[in-house]
Amino acid sequence: MHQPTTDPRPSIYYSYKVFQPWLPSANPAQQKQPVVIAGSGPAGMVTALELARHGVASVVLTPELQFSQGSRAICFTRRSMEILQQVGVADRMTEGGLPWRFGNSFYRGQRVFRMEAPHDADDRFFPIINVQQQFMEEYLFDACAASPLIDFRWGNKVTQVTQKNGFAEVQVDTPEGEYTLQADWLVAADGGRSPIRTALDLKLEGASYEGFFVIADIKIDLPLPTERLAYFDPEWNPGNTILMHREPHGIWRVDYQLPEGETPEEALQPESMKTRINAQLKMIGHEGTPWQMDWSSVYSARTLTLPDYVHGNVIFTGDAAHLLPIFGVRGANTAFQDAQSLGWHLAFLLKGLAGPKLLANHSTERVGAAREIIDEAGKSTRFMAPPSRGFRLLRDAVLSLSLSQAFVRPLYHWRTSRPHEYAGSMLNSAGDDNALFRAGPAHGAPPQNIRLSADDFLLDHLGGAFDLLYFTEAAAIPEPLQAVVAATRQRGIPLRVVAVGAAHPVTGADLTLADADGHFRHRYGVQASGAGYLLRPDQHVCARWLTLDANRLQAALNTALPQ
Ligand SMILES: Cc1cc2nc3c(=O)[nH]c(=O)nc-3n(C[C@H](O)[C@H](O)[C@H](O)COP(=O)(O)OP(=O)(O)OC[C@H]3O[C@@H](n4cnc5c(N)ncnc54)[C@H](O)[C@@H]3O)c2cc1C
Image (cartoon, rainbow, N blue to C red):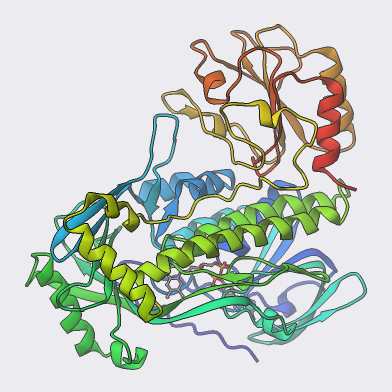
């Protein structure tokens, strides 16, 4: 019988609430579900929220009775905030978070590189915001709890998975024993160790790096701005790397690489950690500042993915699907993009708006994203923790040259997580004008946000449906386009029309956005009225035209929803 701990987890800055377990005896007999999600981390909860946005109900199973332990993921990217905005938690993230955009790399006491993440007036969110994972999970849970389509079950652990003919069956253990649950689709969002991945005997492909890093969260008052600090080959930890991040609630994250041969057990000894953290504080000129340990852990970098995320009626997502190094803030940020993608692909399949090819497309796109990240994160990891003598020689050459030669300094550039562009997606329209545009988001890219007024941005209005941005100054959307829109909606496909450019509401558009100074057109590379962009429900561009007509719109919708 599964007995999750009921002792609140220790934390200096977060009060863990212990939820009541969901018990089968207190609930009616279990019907077959459209979707069961195993896991209530960021991937599981965002998938549930996205599905609910598309009108699909799900059951979320989680073995624990409280949110995850320690700060874990702390840096959330702009694209993650745009995704979290879609599921209604961006405001709470912004209220509690610390935004930042600069990163500093130090070598031998000298700052050798200062990274500045791009940020312009059209961006609602900062490039990165720091929020501890428990808070993010709390915000997501509150949104799940507010949805009548999400049945959230604390204290429910998946112990067995069976693939049946056209559905999945899971055994679920609870504090009063087991019950069986059937689902058209089982989403395995059960984290890096994924018991479901193990049960199905699936193997991750890729590499694991040997170097260990200690993560320590300490409570300390340091008069430093919120910027990333990276120290290479520091005097107290020769040859190794240290990172520091400010977190909300007076917490700092110190990550330091262990000397070769030291075990995680040795490294986590309180005396060892105390000595090293004090040495780091001394090195940055804050020796003697009092601090308190909140949480510590050890990790090593891995760049692994399943080669396919759909197996029968089980779909893998988040860390269950891939393991990525946290350098460059990949873990949770990638999980959000997986979940956002999975939400609409699975919902449209379940609603009969597209065939199984759509789900296969989700897997192809997200495996492609994981492989791109693995490639980039591998470069960062080899710089942070060189895996061999050759890589170390190269890295050390960059380090020492950087003291005197400016041209090598950009090699420190932090390859931060960025949204994958589905440039080769089968959902992209072949007969459109993508190649003719000179600006604007291209095939597969997420949309460029546009500031409409002081607290009003384009992305506040998009998502959850196909969105057609139609650039016009006329009084109405052309009749033939309106006819395609009406016929599409009649088939149950959500499609919204946003007219861009007219000063007054445009007939046939759900929303009209004025563009008096032409700024919107300029950013989208639009020269004349009659141009358009078609965005998928996850906001990525699947077609764009310099001149749109009804046939081209229909063709793009057909391509985007393969039968
Ligand atoms: C120590 C540590 C530090 C980290 N630091 C960072 C960082 O600084 N930056 C960053 O971006 N990422 C970081 N990460 C990674 C980040 O936390 C993950 O990438 C992210 O949480 C992945 O989300 P997920 O939903 O896929 O998995 P998880 O958040 O791991 O969630 C998995 C869920 O599955 C549940 N589960 C497990 N077994 C079962 C079962 N049998 N049945 C049902 N449910 C089950 C778990 O209880 C949990 O709810 C860190 C992770 C760790 C462990």
